[in-house]
Image (cartoon, rainbow, N blue to C red; front, side):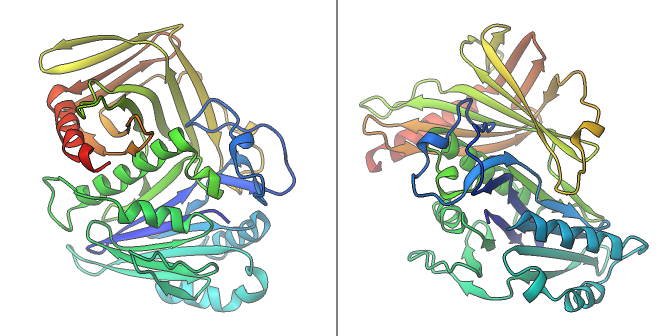
Length: 394
């Protein structure tokens, strides 16, 4: 079991699942988008399960039902296959339909070593929705943010000023909630209940988690991570966040607390094609840097960066070879979530992050040719200033 989680911001449901599948059986080398090396030798020696591959754990059942899983692949596949088949002919699924399906399924026997979280949405009026949630296991545990008293085999629920109601289950629960409770200050122009505020907070969270995985294997050491999927309700249906770049920047504090110019060392671009998630990971070794028009632009040419493509299929994909691999993964995006690993001389990590959509940050990747990242200089200065403020407390 790894990690599945949900945040609920003013009745705006977001669901999250990691991409890591693990097993007791395999000792084969494995790679993840956050690092180009096999992390296995650096994981705890007594870790019962070992990372083996990436895979999707989040699925939509029609437009208004989203489900995320953790646990045993056989139990999950059987459940998902039957649920999709059972509701195949439905134009719309009600929460009563889901309740009846779950009653008949005999979860205690057929799903005893796994977990799911189902969110059903009904549009009550033109401006309001009714959100219903279904858990397995059914036990819940209220978590004290100070003590982090999580319980294995339960859905752990914690309240937070930024993320409001947070529900999590799986091996990564404690580590996940630990990051949530340290979320710190959120600076945003969006009001509570605004859709974009929910997008902002959750993509920032992913950028922070990916950054920690990059610099310390934080997630993988507890058998979760490898990447993350998120889903949100648009007002009409559930969609996964995609065509987004997660960027990890690196910098080091000097003795006065200045971080200089943080460098974007890793770009991970998420895109879905026919339900397969493709992650384009670009590891940059060298940039030409220039300032112009209020922007700082980082340009790297072929030979100075390494590109790796990850295919992440769903558990019900019988053969990934049936999906034709797109020939060109070039992309241009202004949907970017920036994470920072800013390190002191004592190896303490400060991990701020921000999300930007539109003018402010853009990335232009031309496969096999170049990658260019432009960041508004005032964004960089804000990171530098806020980092200097917290430096005395690190």
